[in-house]
Every structure is written in structure tokens, then in C-alpha cells.
Length: 295
Image (cartoon, rainbow, N blue to C red; front, side):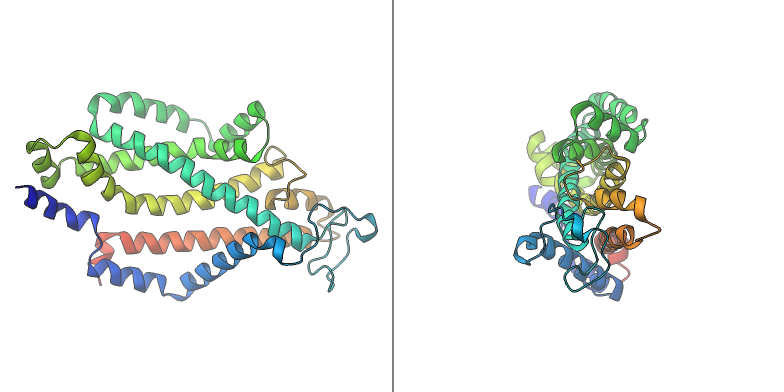
């Protein structure tokens, strides 16, 4: 009986040959390869920013302010004489950190609360009403309010962006667990007296991982945009910290004179978000059993 229950769980938790072929096909397309290459380049450049011999992104040089493209400053300088390329590359660190941190901060509590809400009926009502209350407030307004109360720094901005995101993770996991709870292999495990913690770890949690991976990519992209919007509005990262939102905000006063002050970080921001979304779409197609059966 135990063998039957475990074998029934394998198709849902493990990727079969069809899913592997779908994954290889999805990740091998031209747009996805471009997205993976660009995102990998951004990550490597951000990590190695101090080793590239770039100018200090914080160094102010009034004699070099608003310079155009040159060998010394590939994308020119801003109104304070700071190198735009250096600020954009160092700003990628902030954006990537915010994206990864927000995804982790939203997925972990969302997974825990979602499993509890989906499995225990008496907890479902309480948890989901709290999630509905959080989701009733526009995400960007809630994030701005949290930063205004706690102060602007990278940790508070990360948490402020994660709070509006994690109710969506709770709803996703809850829906998955509600469907899995009536599966034959789960019922067989319950009838055998499997302890609830072991049931969750061995049969429920593995089946929520693929959708959570895809959801995490979209949270990553959404967090990068949210940080840029908040910083542009002046309620995100402190002005002295180079971030894509801050660089764009500082360049808006000189847009007619030097549009590249906004266009350069804007292009990096747009391509990064596009790359993450393309990878997320490819992973969603690869991890969807319906797509795997089409191979």
C-alpha cells in the first residue's frame, strides 16, 4: 500500500521525459537564449563591478558635469559629474538584490501559510481574510506607506515590496494544496496514518515547487520595477545609493538636454525585466504537464 501511494506521487512531483524535452525546447529558443545571456551578463557585471576599473559611482566632479559620450565616460556624466555607466552597473546590484530578496521574502512565508490554509480548513478562513485585507490596498501605495513609516534603506524597501506580493503566493499555494488534498495518493497516505508534517513534506510541498519557481521569476521582475518606481518618486532607496530608479529620477530634469541620462538606465531596466519575464514564461511552459504532453 505504501509503495502504491509513493509511486502515485512520482508523476506529479518529478519531471518525466516529456517535461525534460519541453524544458530543453523552451530554453533553446532564440528569445529565451537572448534573455538568459543578457541576464547572465548583467549578473556577472554587477558582481564584478569593483574589478572592472570603473569610475567611483559616488565621486562628484563638477568640472565633468553633463559630458557626452567619450572614451573616458562611455555613456557620459550626470549633473554632478558622476560616470553614468558606473552608476548603472552599480545600480544593477541594488535592483538584483531587491529582486532576489523580495522573491525569497514573499515565497517562504507564502508557502508556509498557503499550505496551512489549503490543508487545515479551520485555518483557511482566518488566513485568507487577512490576505484579502492586504490585497485590498494597492501594492505600491502599501509599499510607500511602509517605507514612510520605517525609513528608507535597502532592507525596508525590500520588505515593503515583498509584503504586497506574498498574499498572491499564499493564494497560489492554497489553490494547489486544495487540489492535491483530494488526490488518491494523498488519501492513501492519510489512510495509512502518515503524520501530517511528513505528509506535507513528502507529498504536498514537492508538488508546489514548480509553480512557485515560475511565480518567483515574476515577483523578481515586479520587485525590480517597484523599486525603480519608488526610487523615482523619492520614497525608495536613499538618493546617495545608485539604483536604476535614482539614476532615472536624477536625470529627468535634464531630459531635453541629455536624454541618455534616462534612456541608458531605462533600457537596462526594461531589458532586465523583459529577460526575467521571458525566462519565467519558458519555465512555465516547461513545467506545465499539459505542455509536456504535447511534445
